[in-house]
Length: 137
Image 1 (tube, one colour):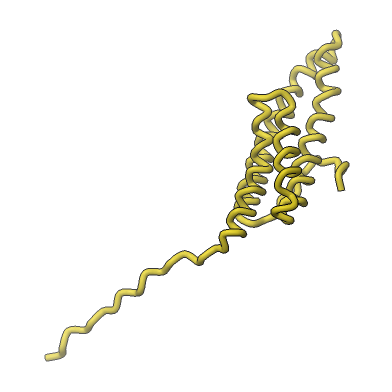
Image 2: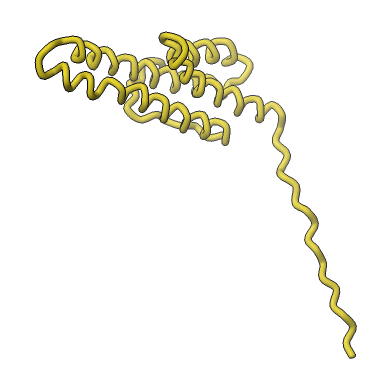
């Protein structure tokens, strides 16, 4: 008769410890991108949110400088794209129809890309927005 075999249970694995400064940096970079969603509550909030967070926290968190510039460039680009679409929407004739069809696309695209960038920033990754005019270097 053989003795019963003992099974070993693996030791519980703990999550790797993240430096608190790194965690704060990731949170502030995420806030910088997601602050653009304030456009749904505040006029020009999509530009003001990233601008304010970038200006206040860029010296405390150097990594935030690149994220702030990227977020601000993208939101300014979306604002620039919105202007001709608004003009097309106001002008009569067939252009009115095209402008009104395209007008809601800009805030939706802005929202989707801001959320994607916020998630990537929280994961410690840099997200390069598409359709961006790089005005701030």
